[in-house]
Length: 349
Image 1: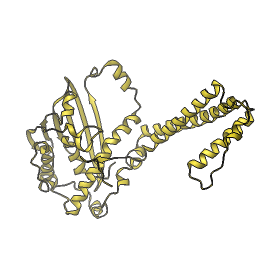
Image 2 (image 1 turned 180 degrees about the vertical axis):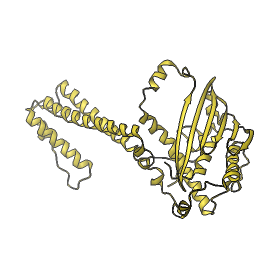
Image 3 (image 1 turned 60 degrees about the vertical axis):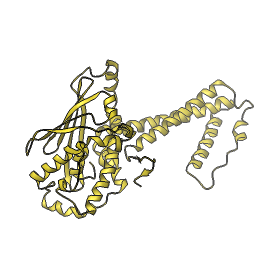
Image 4 (image 1 turned 90 degrees about the vertical axis):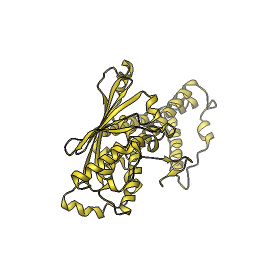
């Protein structure tokens, strides 16, 4: 669920040439940008929409084997893109549902009609990737669309433009023909914009500027609705809890093996070190002072023994697992997007 107008979200899907620019280093590269051809097949109708014939959107797509394709807008909210890739048919189908002014829901799926489009082992591997991992990767693409389309949305509102967008833009590029045909369809058959129920029309004045936090709020936009992402969060919680237990146990055994101390002494020493690390990590003003000799003096051979090294390595691995799980969990709640211009300036702020 995105904080964007239906019209701009459909435009973004129909605009194939935006990929190497707004999705630079994620789903394309600016160096691959190239002219693309697009022409309408047949006429436009109220119920059937329109069909466009198009070439590969950029040089990167051509290198990956993409050939010509067809772009079909089927009213009121489906965009279907069919293309050839190395002799195989590849499809992208999306549905954009207007919920209110400045709020739309977006559903999409990429698929093929050839079970042998990939190698057998790669297909087997892809079928076993958890859906929540796929969702996290596609969020990076949606983040870019939200950030840049929101800028366009703000610019239109600042100029008082809310309908008949076919007259608001001058788009002479061939690659923009699908966008302009869509806006003309909207003007001819829907009064230039989505016609909401009368109580919702008053909301136009209330959905003003959308903050960056709102645009990248993955919890509100997706995670809270998605059972797969809830499963992913629960799995990461279990992994974190297990890693904490393993890490504490491994650290205790490492101290015991290194110092030949009693289990109780090893537990106390581990607790002391863990407490000091925790206090310093959260930035306490008066961190607990731990003197290494206090721990190491329990035995003369404080660093000896391969067992202590193995247990210490396991404790480090557990800490890495905890940190990576925490970083991954954060992606369910908040997105991150960096737009780079040719001088690598980060924007928008």
